[in-house]
Amino acid sequence: MDIDIQHEESASRFIAMVEGQACVIDYRLAGETMTITHTGVPSTLGGRGIAGQLTRYALDTARARGWKVIPACSYATGYFEKHPEYRDLLA
Image (cartoon, rainbow, N blue to C red):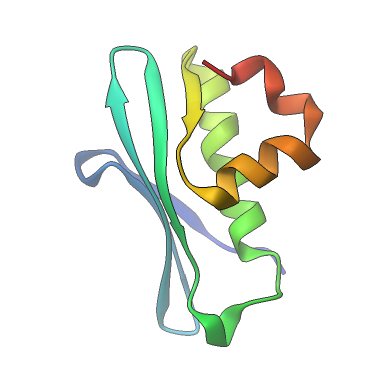
């Protein structure tokens, strides 16, 4: 399932609307470091890979902008463990 992800910089989040429900990654930016504080996908949409797509998009954005990343939420921490290709982004 491909989803349309938007980066809402003014709200410090990445968001995708899926079946009328918001799926989000919230973050804080301090200088060149993005701290991922929350990954949220409604339970009715779980198991479809939406959180993974959001996380990949956020990390690709961080890489493109030269940011480092602190995974402060459990989902983001787990994503880094499963995807070593992004470990160079860890702050």
